[in-house]
Image 1 (cartoon, rainbow, N blue to C red):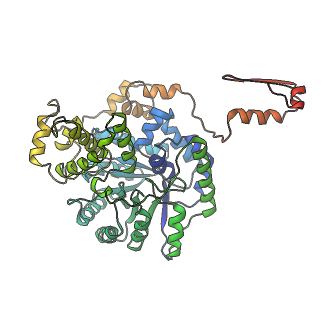
Image 2 (cartoon, one colour):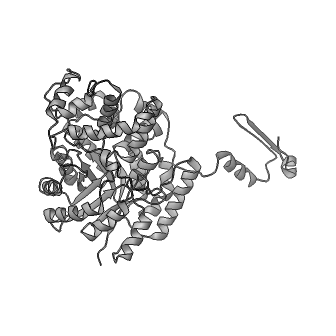
Image 3 (cartoon, rainbow, N blue to C red):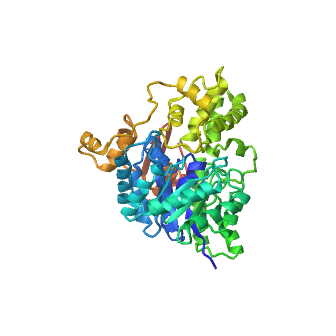
Length: 493
């Protein structure tokens, strides 16, 4: 009986998809010790967007988040995702910065690294994966899936073999960020990958439930050779997130596979996050209906929501369908970029501009120019010549036609912040202005989570002290005074 390993995504991709990455460390800590005992192969924990949200919105030190969870999860490897050579922004960074990033992930407790490049330009990720292996980390090469004329099974098989040969990865991940895989395609893609990399390399499948097909795609993938599947714990599952562990495990067992996870602990963790969602007003994941139109534009689910909101804010909500059709047209013109960060954003921005301007490509953002000129890596297919001419003509001439490699930056960074740690230096490198100072000024990280209002908790604690003769409580406009006589009679002012 083959054992199928489960990689949990609840603490990273699931809340990224459903809660806009707004899960705090305090929401996680009450259950991480139980999650460590569930039996996961690994726990997908940090990506670039988690660092961004921690610093800018939650005012939490992301390095401290890693350390605190690592302390409570000694058995389950924590995994971090790396997007090409660009970290948080769009621009490619110097290699020494990216390698320092790997160093600090390892030093703080990350034991697995998955790296992907949306152009499948392996030069952008091989150095990081090799460095991760040098540090003793498990290196995972991810191939981002999409449907296009330039992304056949043979391309993925070739790139998988290169990742094994050049980076020595132990796992190849099919990263279906757009939820585009179908049962038919997975039946041909997985055997092609297995034939290319051989039996000694694990195959991992990561998808999203945007089209409603991912749970079935997982089962078909396992039948054809997938060893590991990425799932999240319901209610932080389905919708734009990953398939629910509870359902996938039940179905795999019914098919005769071994799934070595503790269902009772999973239920406890799921109940914890259901209560958090109720208290915080966060959405719960629900299955989504199949939508064939998704395969035309291929925009990820979370980005679709943001795109519609932004158009409504600009008074352009009637242009929503038109923009999606324009996105599909632009993808073909630009050589079929995969709709993941950063290309999803730059294609969508260009689509909006093309719709609202009197002439297509009349206004071209810097990022679109950089993409077309190869700043982000080698394109799988060329930009249509007339479109390239318009992009060059109508974009900033301050961006040279030929990209230059970024110069080394770590030594200068250390000179600029002589009293800081490398962890802090990297944050300051990534986040401009006062963002890191604002995070530090917010004070110590909150590490406890209470489901009750703090006032209710206080009153319950006071009720356990019968010898107190008088209590006065003020909170905003609320004033509550109790004396021993009033407490006895139940009087409240």
